[in-house]
Each structure stands twice: as structure tokens, then as C-alpha cells.
Amino acid sequence: MESQKQVLERLRAAFRSGVTLPMHFRLTQLEAMMSLFEDNENQILEALHEDLAKPKFETVLSEIEIVVNDICYAISNLQTWMQPTYVGTNLATKLDDCFVRSEPLGVVLIIGAWNYPLHLILLPLIGAIAAGNCAILKPSEISRATEKLLAELIPKYLSQECYAVVCGGAEETKTLLENRFDHIFYTGSQSVARCILLAAAVHLTPVTLELGGKCPCLIYGRLDMKAAAKRLVWAKFFNTGQSCVAPDYVLCTTETRDALLPFIKEALESFYGSDPQQSPDLGRIVTDRHWDRLVELLKKSEGKIVIGGESDKKTKYIAPTVIVDVIESDALMQEEIFGPILPIITIKSLDEAINFVNEREKPLALYAFSDESQVVTTVLERTSSGGFCSNDGIVHMSLPGLPFGGVGASGMGNYHGRWGFETFSHKRGCMMRSWLLECVNVLRYPPYNESNLSW
Ligand code: NAD
Image (spheres, helix red, strand yellow):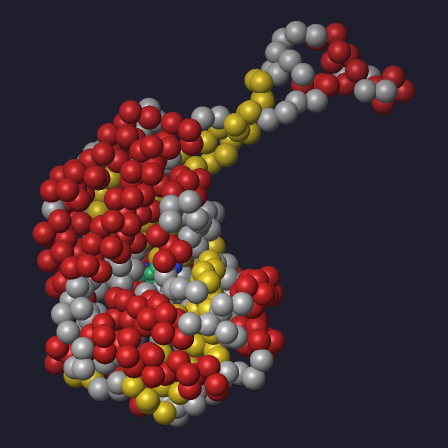
């Protein structure tokens, strides 16, 4: 079997050969990615079901359609994206062609997390391919079935010269990171991101970090409680709460909480029935270790469980759970929950809610629910987060026109659509000088005298 070093050398040789440069090559690879999805939908559904018991609809929406849409978007726009951008000139450069050229970076490393194991590898790969790079893909070892499937399908569909999958966990990734890459695109936890940055520093490698954190959902003022509850419940419990952009906690007044709770109950029952454990539409926690952490959080929380709370280790099940009377020092508020547990924290005013958010790390997503546009605008203007969505959750990430990424502790850099192409491109500022009017250059050549300054 080829060593990591050999794989990297093979990809580097391919990149240096210039094979990835023509638009035709990039389009062929993107089209091959489309065929990968067309030919293997059942295998993809099975792998995701094995890893996370993902319902078919959730896999289609969040692992297949989101990637396929981005591929189509890239195919339709690649020619435009690849065009140089001409910039204005001044008197001294009037005869020159000055433009910004998007160039590939080289061989890039894409490291993925387990919660959307296919999309978190293939969506960045679209940007990397579109921009003309070679890439090593390192899927999460935790979502084993999807990791195996990627290792089988990528070489079957994409150029083996240019793209490779490396399997394994922390140790294999650390060894991989000893090598020089031209860019590292990492999705995962904040703690591992620090190791990635340290490893990248050795080679001065630029890095994109797609991290997590606690995404707040502010619900304030007049609104349709029934619709709000449905949208909140869907966004929170989609993928069993294991989404980096899931609403992590709700901030609202006591009155809003009391009005909202019956509708949350109703929404949960209408989505998952009276016994959610029997519902085919609710996935499972990814591993025993992750299940233990969530159940421990539930035990440590001093809040009051008002919905759910049941769990079953054998099937890695945790019921959709809502907890009230949660205070800032509660265990649930010390880390990203990343599971089907929704704490509700009460605040007295919009100002207090905004301060609550601003006193913490900048989140990956921030949600503001209200029928009063002034409330939404105030939250938008007075906070900072990777992305923002009013009156719904998660859906903002489905649009290839919007950049997706964090800010501060929730990450650096972004992707999706053109943003992915830009992330994996170097902007080369080029000036193509003319030989004409050499006489004007006399003004800048030594020996300097007063007439130089008139230039
Ligand atoms: P993780 O950091 O444990 O693992 C991510 C990847 O890093 C895996 O491929 C893993 O093999 C590798 N890895 C693990 N330990 C390593 C080490 N010591 N050195 C080098 N590599 C190592 O993250 P996870 O548990 O898979 O993912 C959950 C986190 O990811 C959550 O915080 C979530 O919010 C975040 N996330 C963010 C996004 C986003 O787009 N911003 C998307 C999904 C998940």
C-alpha cells in the first residue's frame, strides 16, 4: 500500500504537470462527482443510516442535494469565476494591462467531521477542484461506513492522479499534518483546531477552520408561536441535534417561554409521534462516547426537564429534550451541546439577550425570531456571528450564494459556491507592462533631482 508520503508526492507531481489547470479538466471532475451521486444514492443512504441512523429525507437534503446543488452551481459559473478581473490604471500605468488572476494553491488537505460526513468532505472539494487544486481528503474515522464509502468511490470517479482519500483518526491525521500542504481546510472541534493551527504554523500553511460553538436563538416580541415552534424544533432536532448550526439554546422572556412550550410539545409530537424512540424520522447519537457525554450533561444540568429526558444506551437514543430554568452557570451552558437537548434561558429584555450573546464567543450562526422587523434588525446590527438567519434555523446554509463560515472562535474563512472557489484560489495581482513611452520613465531613474519629484 502507498504511504502517505507517496500519495502526496503523486498528487504534487500531478499538480506540477499542470493537468488541473484547464477549465475542461475541472468541469470533467465536477461532472464525475455528479455521477458519483447519481450512481450510488442507495449506498450513500445505507452508509449514513449505519453511521447515524439518518432518515432518508435528511440524508437526501443535507448530504446529497446540498452537494449536488453546489456542483451544478460551480459547473454553471466556473467560466466566469476563472476570468481575470481587470483593475483601473493611473497615469504611470495607462498602457499596461493590470488584472487579478485566480490561481490554484497546489495540493490541499481537507479534513472532515462526522456529523455530515459526506457533505463536509465533498462540499469543500468542489471549491478545491473548481479552483484547480489537487486534494487529499481525510474523512472522520467516527462515521466509519461513510469513510469507507468515500475511500471506495473517490478513486472510482475522480482522477487518481489528483485526488486521494486517506483514512484514519487522530494519529494518522497528525502524521499527515507533518507534511507541507498548500492549504488546510478543517471542519471539526475548536480543541483539535488548535492542533491543526500549530501543525500548519510549521510550514506557514494557510488554513480555513470551520468550527462549532453555541448558536443562540433569540425569540422576542410578537410572533406566530406555532410556526416559530415548528421551525425551531425542526432546526434543533434535525440530525438529532448534531449540527454545527443547530440552535444550541433559546433566549426568551418568561412570557414567551410559557406561550411557546405547548407549541414545541405539539410540534415534537406531530414530527416524531408520542414515542419518538419508535420514529423512523429521528436519528441516533453517533457513538457510545458521544451518548455518554450528552447523558452526563443531562444529569449535571440543574434545569427542569419539561419535555423528553429519556435515553437508551443500547440504541444510542436520546429523546428530544427541552429544559427550562437553565442559568448561565449550568453544565449545559459550558460547552456546545451537539445533541437533542434544548435549554431555554429566560431574559427580561432584548438588551439583556444581546448582551448575553455578546459576552460569549462569536457563534457560527445566530437566529432571531420575531414578527417585529425592528427586533430582527437590532439583533443583526448589534451582534456578530458566522451567519445569520431570521425566523428559521439551519436553512441559510443551503444557498450557494451565501458564504458559510465562522468568525472568531467559530472559525476562519468560508466556502459554498463562489466562496469555496475563492478559498482555494490565490489572487495573483498581475501587471503586464508595455515597452512604450520609455521616455516617461526618466522621471523615476537616478540620479534623483528636483525634477524627479514632479512625477
Ligand atoms: P473533531 O475535531 O474531533 O474531528 C474532526 C477531524 O479531525 C476528524 O477527521 C478527526 O479524525 C480529526 N482529528 C481528531 N483529533 C485530531 C488530532 N488530535 N489531530 C489531528 N486531527 C484530529 O470533530 P468532530 O467531533 O468530528 O466534529 C464535531 C465538531 O465539529 C463540533 O464542534 C461541530 O460544531 C464542528 N462542526 C463544524 C462545522 C462547520 O461547518 N463549521 C460542521 C460540522 C461540525
